[in-house]
Length: 592
Image (tube, rainbow, N blue to C red; front, side):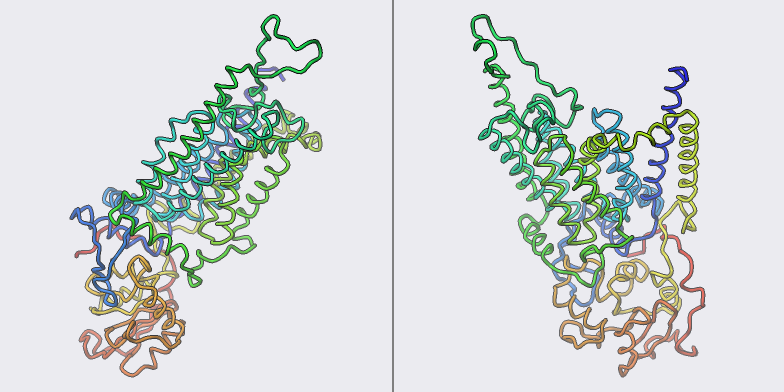
């Protein structure tokens, strides 16, 4: 094949592959199922926009009315409220997709920055795997801003370690925004201090053992200038082939004799490198301490930081995403990313930067500890692993020589490009059709949320103090504005731990402290039909089921207080299709 046609075939194949990966990313980030807290986030952000006032005491519940409320996500909620104000549920979906794609591209840009074609291909391929797990955390909720902030932090750290130390000035403002957006800022600060400590340790190691071999490198891995401490060579920002140091000629009369060793670096250049290392270290540590101080730039001062650390240590076994990740297909992408990261850093001949290893180890530990953290590890893995993985694959390329030979043939490349193009089209089609009724907006699955039961409550004018399942509390804030829930998804930002525990005990039909949860003060209840607590409440004197379907049951205390229930044959059974399909997220704020 002529060179021009061969180049065109390669370009078409690359573009088709990139289009396929991008289509997968759009598919993953465009999941439009409403998060249980979505209703509340829009309400709180809209209230702030309307009044300019941050509510510091709970105005919504009947169990803890007036209790201190630490709303640490107000900035994220304002952004969500603005998106909702602009385009309703569509605005919220677009916000989620945009933040997801930005996160993906920032992480990917770290991996492919000035890399060779093999690294780029490896990065896009790894991205197709990582995005599956990254998108796990991408419902429309404040946590998506932690994902983006983490990707930006890693990009800034790469710049600083590459010698562009002035980028460290951006880190404190980033953390000042982050602290008002999501509690994941604590993880980001831990990673920043870990990176500074790891780089310090690596530099000290080189100072003690000489700079002839990069920290973590193996004999024959490349020239000695490949370590992280050679900031003037921008490690990690340029391909390995460009890292070869220039050995200046010796001035006349200064040779050490024929065959004698001589220094690779002249004293002025060595001094320049020392200064570069010092700038990197100073910029990292100053950025870390000033970023820590930036956490105080929030409405609650040090109280928010103290609360965040307390919240991190609070175990939530009743909430699935706070439990340890288990081996299985649900999070197979996470386990594959961990395995590839471990293999790449252990067996690659590319010199490893200790700060990158530290970041990945910490985030992997966090991922194994709680499911909600697995996307954070995969963001870091996408940013840091591909160059090492490409090097590892290159070591074993002779094992795949027959396969690569097949794909060098024009017919094979054309077939593969066509396959990627078809896959991209199929994925985009699925983006707008698979498991969705209205792909352009947020949706509320009726099998997950009590849409029909709430409609019954609205039609029969039930109101007052509501005993509710915590996952439905913020939906009720929106749909039942004249009723006060007993609990909602704000949990420990507003509700004391003993009140939360009393609800768990009630849900499980276990004994609970009635001083904390006095059901005699409740007027009606909205609970899952098959919950043990629902069945126990139905047997309680004075409580009567008035509606039920496959998902939810509505019970009232003293039905006579609700005139619209008179004349009905109670309990009313919901339509068999009440829990089928998906309802659109409402496009109008509730009156308050």
